[in-house]
Length: 78
View (cartoon, rainbow, N blue to C red):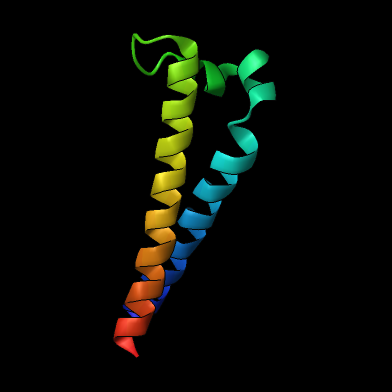
């Protein structure tokens, strides 16, 4: 039963990361950053546009990995 709750939690976190990568990290928030976006834009000493694409890529990658690992775990357990 623990695996089911862990799978649901991983799936929800993956969906939230995909949402953040698609809708929160966008060009509008890049041009008018709030506190959270300022943190992402100062991720590395590289230019802001590279930090924008790096953060967007890493958030989307994490979301896809979590969703696919949840689906894989559910398939393996059944």
